[in-house]
Image (tube, rainbow over all chains, first blue to last red; front, side, top):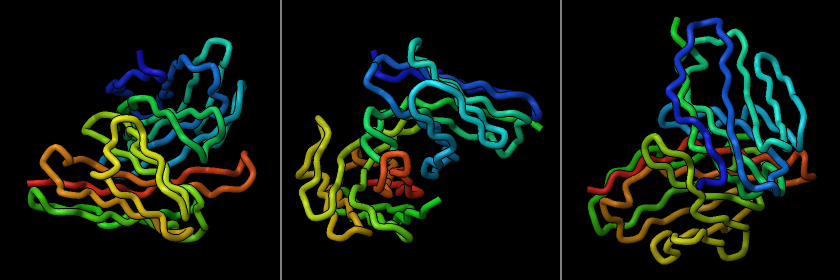
Length: 112
Length: 118
């Protein structure tokens, strides 16, 4: 069993819909949770960074962490075709600048 | 966000040759850099952690003599794939950490290098 599980998708939604992504994990030592967006053949770009349980909102993006369930989510409101990409969750016991464990990524396609 | 430059973006080489990939933090000093490998439609697999002025720490199963890492300065780390073979063909991505207090220590990624070994 992988430490971090993420549905590979693809997840196809119409433009304007809410995109809902999630990851589950098994290592209770994880305290820092990140979401990255990766366009094809490019490096990952940090979208959201949260510590411990709770919610964080930034523009159209909302990240949620439920440590009791070992479950994290990312919601994208008012999705745009430019949001079409692969979304990777990543986790660390010791901070976003240290060794990260990534999920497998979910490919998202937002159709105009 | 901070900028990490990775070069080259694409390289094609013959089997048996060595290839060097550079990773530079352009607007910050990075005491720690990471090297990842990514296969098509798969996630990033950490290969090694590189700290300036010291030997890299390799993940289990990664051949240190095959993948040479040099972190000679606070803004530059290099990955050399020695005696490359077709099975080394992959997408290699570096990242650099900004350091500082925990909440502000963020890892920024380069754009990746696509290596094709013929």
